[in-house]
Amino acid sequence: MSEQKQRKRSYSDLEDNSNQRPKRNNSKNFNNRNRNQNSNPNKKHKKNKKYVTFDNLKLKNSLVRSLKAISIYRPTPVQRKCLPMLLSGKNATISSKTGSGKTLCFLLPAIQLLTRLRSEPSQGTIALIISPTRELATQIFKVSWSLLRFEKQRCGLIIGGQNKQKERHHLINGSNLLIATPGRLLYHLNETKGFMIRNLRYIALDEADKLIEKGLEPELDKIFTIINRRIANNLNIQKREKSKKKEKENTKENKSVKINHLTNLQIVLTSATQDDQIRGLYKHLGGNLNDRFALKYIGVDDESQSATVKTLEQGYIICKSDQRLIFLINFLKRFSTSKIIIFFSSVKSANFHSRLLDFLEFPTIELHGQMEQRDRSFNLENFHRAKVSILITTDVAARGIDFAGIDWIIQYDPPDDPNEYIHRVGRTARAGKSGKALLFLRPEEKPFLKFLTKSKVSLSQFEINEKKIKTDIQEKLEKIIEIDKTLKKFAIEAYKGYVISYTSHTLKECFDLHQLDLRKVAKSFCFKKPPKISFGFNVKKGNRNKRKRKLNNKY
Ligand SMILES: Nc1ncnc2c1ncn2[C@@H]1O[C@H](COP(=O)(O)OP(=O)(O)OP(=O)(O)O)[C@@H](O)[C@H]1O
Image (cartoon, rainbow, N blue to C red; front, side):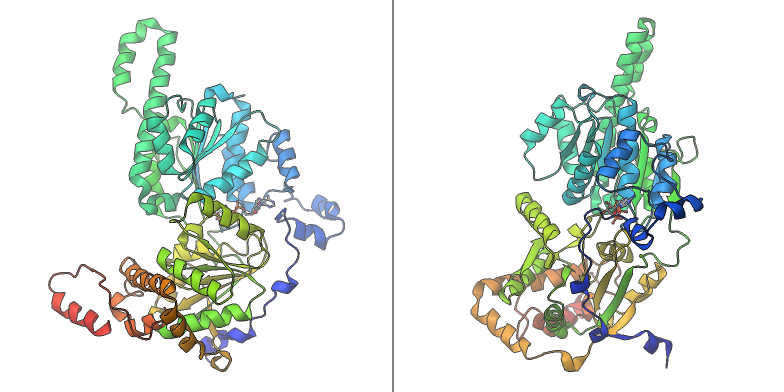
């Protein structure tokens, strides 16, 4: 049997073990497994020289107590490696697999710093955490809140979509630890008088690579320029108070805000996927990689053969466009007692599929960036609580969110690149738990597997057992769309969104717009034949006629 064949697994061989899933462990503790396996863990630990506690890492007693209160007793490998360095004030960029505990790596040093400085609310923000999404920022805020339970320092959250007035009030009252998304942070830096940032000493950028990739670089640049200027002014005021003689010199400095005071900050960058872009971002922050402020790279899993965790079982299926939806529906029927996340490439597509699946009596929860913030938070909370549910989402939920008890990650629309794949599947199999992931690929998209392999992700092929797939449903779906005009509208938008999303794929050799057979694509949006719509693509000169003809043929 060929190697490829040996690796193939039948989709129907996959067991739905959701019913046997151990009860959700709220503590999400990596160490519980060890404790359960060993009736007397202390004996084993005494023998084990590597046994490290948070106390060994010189973490304050009150912080160790806060950790115990949320059932966290021992540091994870990445925490063991990073905390000594970060607690001593060094700058670092941290890379380790999804769900390995990076949040505490940047939060504990921030809080320890606040307590060491005995910072008061009147001193404003001393530590700042920037996150690319609102959901992730909120999650970090909740963890910060529980870690500060025995401290007098305050934490605050400022994210898009929230009441600016309320946020202003909190900022003026002083949030020593502030968690923010870039847009809203920039707004308050510009508009909120009394938002004190001049005492800033610590800055962490979570999912740092995403912050750049999301096109947030110009915003970050402005943020750092303002912070730099405020720190500079503050230092000048302090100097002036010390020595009136030097006032002339100081005034000069006051004008030259080009001096980089950001190098006086402790800087931490984290992500499960990192590349050279991170170095670029660090330079924005004023860090010089050759001096004493050098950014130390801490990569916990660099030697690992795989970029994803061992407890994740992952595979792909090859599915023609017109079979995709039928297969998805069959899959959801089969795993009806599971907690599932399905990723789509566009908001419109997520929108339509959520409605369609609800109609077909698969209750879904929707989450994407074009929803009202209130609905976003409400839906996210509901999904967190649910034992069995289907989350229909876009890449807004791909990063950092700490979901519990997820059985399956379905990438119905493929991700843009291997990094995004790694983050998406990282929403399951977290903190030592197990999980499964399934990637849908059209035959033409198979080259994407090569890119995944290069990024140390290897998948098995799950075969579709054609006999078990009910295909008669296609006709019913087409009828539903004909009758329900609202659903039809959503289907048209989704179809358009799907095709357009193809134009923005960076890996053109895997996701080529011109290889889409629109008649088949239309089937997967419940149409008998492609709806007549204009996509308004920019067709490059030279190939204009050829491409136009090609597109016309397909539409
Ligand atoms: N020392 C620890 N002991 C037990 N559980 C822990 C520990 N540290 C973190 N956890 C838990 O592990 C889970 C994952 O942690 P976290 O969200 O920080 O991972 P991450 O590395 O940031 O993941 P991602 O890359 O996906 O953002 C959380 O539920 C957290 O409570």
